Length: 349
Image (cartoon, helix red, strand yellow):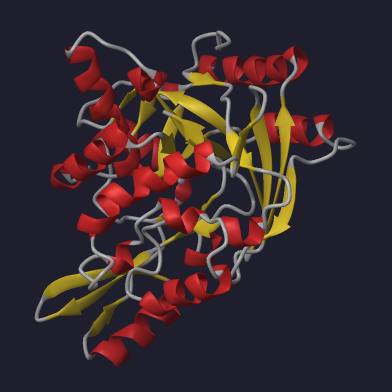
């Protein structure tokens, strides 16, 4: 693994589906989306129709408590399916390298960089001065199940997003130029209104030096030593951090020290900071909903109240975290539900 110059990010060695795999059926949206809409996931199942898919490697939260699809069954089934995909050639490993990603969304083309984040440089606890910090408070009770799954799973799939401040667009602008005439690693439409995704492998020393040089510039300007804020996947990364700490306590080390993430510029024009609305019944929040129209429609359908929230100003994110620590739970959402990260790339654990 190549030294990164101290900014907590490394080039990963990822796995993607073998050539000939239907990538539109393979890639599925993150498990914490459409939690109040099981119908979305039923459509996904019907579209996939038994083809190889990351739907086999995740547990949609909309299924929790559903007969035959509860956590108890998937806890063992998911690692088995991961192992099967590794052994039967469904997944193939590609050379070590970052992946420059362009994702067409409802708000424009969002750009990102797939990388490994060092969990020794991340801390989700209040008062943290770590290089990588959580953006929302962590609910500790949500971590043990995630930690146990990570301990036994042979693969990880990322939906975590780390934000960094690059107002001059140095990194993504440079990667646009670097990949302009290159053949993409993948390029395909995402199912059920997810837009389109295209990625380019950055595997040469020259490529890596471009990334390293720019992050070293950004690190030198980082206020309070904070280079990255978690934009999405706070609890996934908190579980990865806890798993890493348990390993260290036992005097062992493994690839679980690192977590696969997508790095996105806070000032990307297509990056949306949207409010997360609430469904309220009898004075209690019963669900958190992305999208005002969706929230109002579900409130009418379920006979409860739609609590509509105002957007959070992105410009305040880093300063608020530095001053006050992580924000309250569900303060903002990165984009609409259909624009969330799809599971696509995998990594061995």
